[in-house]
View: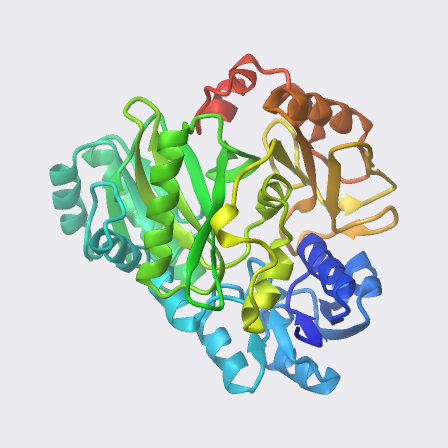
Length: 445
């Protein structure tokens, strides 16, 4: 096993990785910005290094400072978490060129999946279903209009280098396409340094279902079930559950087989997620993207499959066999994750602030992965995620009951918090039925 691990991230995911590292006897090293010096992940690490000011470009995305911290602390490996540098192929290459172990997929796989158009084409060639769309970037508005006419409206306009629900727009006709194309292209150039745009079919009623894959050290790719991610605001997830209430055993078999083919097509190693759109009317699904990292929502898979995905990531990176039997994977029970954000529960606008009260729920089937405690401050410099409330039960109904009780017990005061939204969602008949789609939040508002 790896002996020392630098965690190139912050907040709840850094704290969660550190927890597993310490359980395994791996020396855990945190890097942090000046703004995060008092957060739990810093104090719980065996060693911590400040890598710059609050601005992520000068700290958590500062490659030179992170590598210098790894060198000064004698780190053997780097785990990037999610966000920041986690899907940066150049960073992965630099880490390995520095003689360190990269806890993630190879740089070539990251690069191949980072470009949405290239990823679509690779998946289509591998026999993974893809939605009708462009096979090359729509280089100008004329090309975008021509592509949309061939695909048929409505269409999704997407940044080819985007991710995390950013850089997307829907056009129901040519007039809207002209507006959305310019908007998405401009956003993509600013945010990703790449203005490439793709056009693909938009499904008005659709579910967002993803599959957790793990590329093992021996070269095999295995799938650890699916997660339902259809409760979203602004194309960003708020709730995830596993198994998906929309997926039958026959559909699950097709989902998992397609995800394994996707991983095999790029020689995938370590943890990753194959995201798909599911048309509930036809039971057809289409490849959306592959996230070449650990997902925010990985805990629901851990609870349903009885694995520690961070431990498995470390084992793959070290060339070790998994702790589980790859031929005997089967879900048990049901798990739901709620993302507790510092945001208005009605309009979902960020609301950072000092935390005066922080009381986490506890009990059977309740897990909280948090990045903060009372006395900390949620600053405006980073994502609004404060914690993840994960509940599990023998059935979906039991998991929902436990979620209701846990939400009622969770006390947060100071910053704005979306806990009231979850209390509302957990009483919503559409959600309770399991027959919901990505428009559920809009219908609640």
